Image 1 (tube, rainbow, N blue to C red):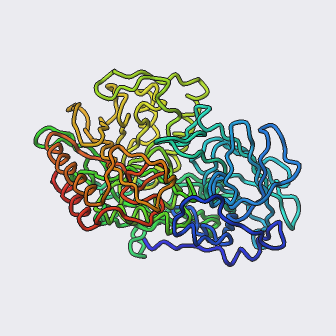
Image 2 (image 1 turned 90 degrees about the vertical axis):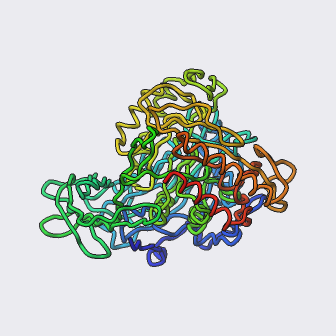
Image 3 (image 1 turned 60 degrees about the vertical axis):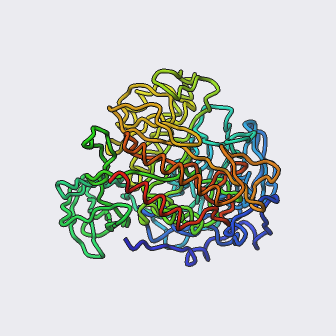
Length: 604
């Protein structure tokens, strides 16, 4: 697919800040930074259209400098304290603030905006890529709505709240308990240490507005049936009476099929299958038609691919892509940045880690207890990178027993009824928002017993949300016999297969963690941590190759996939293939690619 990167230069001229001139901005603190963070222009922050599968031509990007204040959670600011660069969390260097927010605080954002004249008569949608954790949104003094959950996008129709013409006021209040409550929070901790990182609060993905008609497309999903050579398209749309939905699939710019309705099945002759080696994307266009005229138009894409499970000649269950067994091998990817924390400093930075993973010879990424912006998954789709998507954990395993060596060793986390309800709410939103990205082939509801509870119920819930993908029900434990698809062992530093079950796909979900602190590229020079540590690139790569050879031997015993820890250093962890600032690739890339290719090809 030839995706159009839409910039906002044309509309930014009509968008006025609350200040007559741009205030000064500088990164906060003195930590290491990425090259993209060092060269960041605060007037040109993440300007790409944020939703590649649902592109509209008219939109306004609201990223940039907003006013902010931090107050007690139940208070309202008497005045704003300064400026914050959206969409970087308040704790990050690139926010320009670098302040911690506790469970007793509220973070307030404020700015003004104007709408283009040609938007008159349209419904105005205000969109947030993600806000951590609870957001209350106000437009011209009236509440537009609220949203809880730090990882899924959300939108409000603000048309009826806009008071007259001219400038309008936008305020956002954010509260974030982080690890003091059972919310999805991944590796965030108010007191970071070891494998736990700096907390992230507030707006951390792009904010934008766009006009829509009374009838408009909200989302869509495409599921391929490669045996029947058809694409099943489901469209979620708001439709006024008499309006119709039209779906068009194109190949290399040429229409190959179209149909009408919100549930359509379209023939895709001579279907081009998507894979890491050949990541072909079909263009998709969806129109809402009224009396022969198009009142809403969105463009996007789809991939024709299927993920399944089959037994090989030795009786081992294998993951199959498009009916063919494929050993899935990739790094544990935390998705953190020294300057932006949860937010990559630019789209170029966002794609950098994926491309490097591809260059290293991997075919898969495990996105570890974090969810990325939609553009990250699009980059995986277009570059050909499989993804195992974790649910960000709601707790660690200090409140329950972690059983990692055998079935039924562990215990459930004592989640509260409110925490349980919120888990299902957030997991449902995440799956709903990202199941349309074909790169995702595995859902991972739990990791290492962190907040794990009611495993069978969670597996069934996950399957009901999306029956087209495999479920890795508990990466690293707690292991129970359930209706999930994958049994996932963790072992550091070397590969080991201490548990095998013929009824599951068996994988090594984490191993390695070979640490090497690179002077001048450390988050905290006097503190660094790794599962094992060496003093040179040659030592690290020699050990990596030794572990890879051990892994190859275990593939014959039944392993069908593996995850190496990890893509980059993160804060005081120094076991990355790259430094945290992305300035140093620690290992010889050509040799690393050869080793990884050998691992993947050993199952063929």
